[in-house]
Length: 173
Image (cartoon, rainbow, N blue to C red; front, top):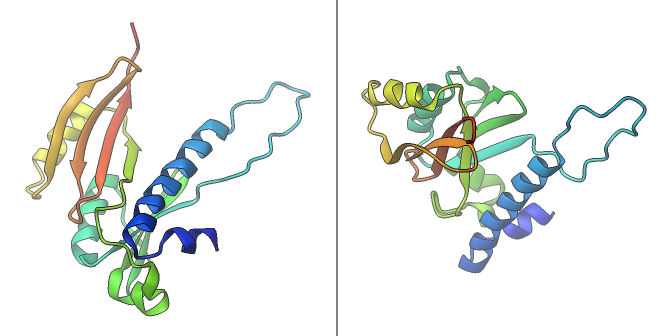
């Protein structure tokens, strides 16, 4: 119910939708399970992120894009919905026209939610070279850059304009 509230089509609610999703991801990261010492009680989780669903008018193009970015074949659930099973959460794509039939007031305007999809990779520099060589029209916003907090990141956009941060952890000085 709360999710539908934040998915209203009016502009203030659209902005709140991005904030809600961001807060869910932050809360999940803060509560992510760590190895509990023996004898300590099991942690209780308030929020567990299981899916990131991108509703898109460019279903086929987005499938190919995420197939290349995630190094995965999508699992075809329906003709208009696919899932990429990654460790920790599923990235899914839903064709916008089909989604609009079940929840017309919840259809977002692509690339405007202020959400950044963050994907950890083993070597961001290697991924940058690989993606550059694919021949896809990828809008790279920032080449691999090392930040003081221990991430080496590159920013790019998917075909709908959603922001993606591909990053690797690096030792901090």
